[in-house]
Amino acid sequence: MNILIAGATGQTGTRLVKDLVDQGHTATALVRESSDTSDLPEVVELRHGDLTDLKPGVCDGMDVVVFAAGSGGSTGPDMTDKVDRDGAKRLVDLAAEAGVSRFVMLSSVGADQSNPEGDLAHYLKAKHEADEHLKASGLTYAILRPVALTNDGRSEAVVLGEEVDKTAKAARADVAYLLAEAATTGHLDGRALNMQSA
Image (cartoon, rainbow, N blue to C red; front, top):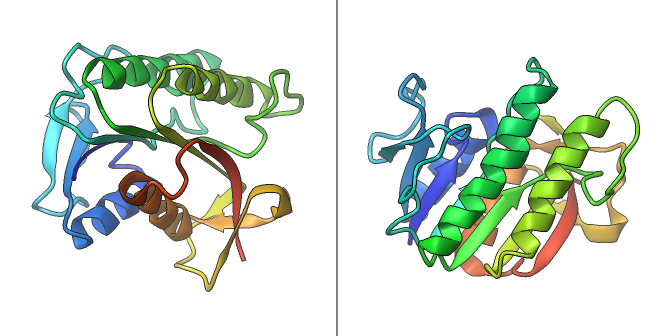
């Protein structure tokens, strides 16, 4: 499958790309001109685009699009809106225009709330709006909402859905594996699931 990954150079995205390549898929990284792509496998194709200003055609030729990007914890609310909300929504629209068969969204636990509270309220509201936009797009979708991320390796098992402990941890390696599975198998189509490592 031809799979476009937004956020391919991030900590989770890099793991996802490697998983997809190992499975024999054609992974295309959506990157800015200034992105450091040195950690990506050599076979990965690059497609230039900025999530704050995506141009038409960026999803052309793709079977699946995965949004695994984020503005990062060090940026302010303005960049959160530009990347996590508006960039994600724009990528969904371009994927729909391109006839992509599936869109996989990396979201966050708590993004199911339309009016979240607490320190992450602005971020979670942005993610909520992006998730809802995807659900309404007509695209076949899967939304994964992990709890707090760690850099641990793959675990023995993961927990999905209502049983997830929202105070638990999720290994990025597990998140990447599940994103790859959602992208390539359709097992999670039409679902928005909380996720943790067991």
